[in-house]
Length: 67
Image (cartoon, rainbow, N blue to C red; front, side, top):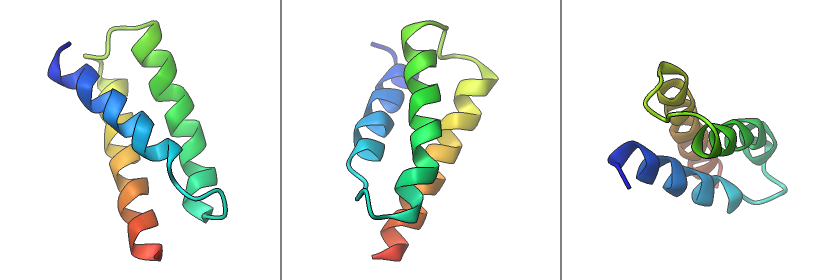
């Protein structure tokens, strides 16, 4: 598995673990779904994948600061 795909899998897993009560979990669910689609269907080496990865990390950071 290449590095981009590994990052996508890690992000999907971590976004799933956000507390359901968190504002950021709700916001991150769309990014998580989009990452799943890109991982399963498309080549993750796209600029769209890069934007989603960046957004996913942003949501994780904001959720961590919320605690």
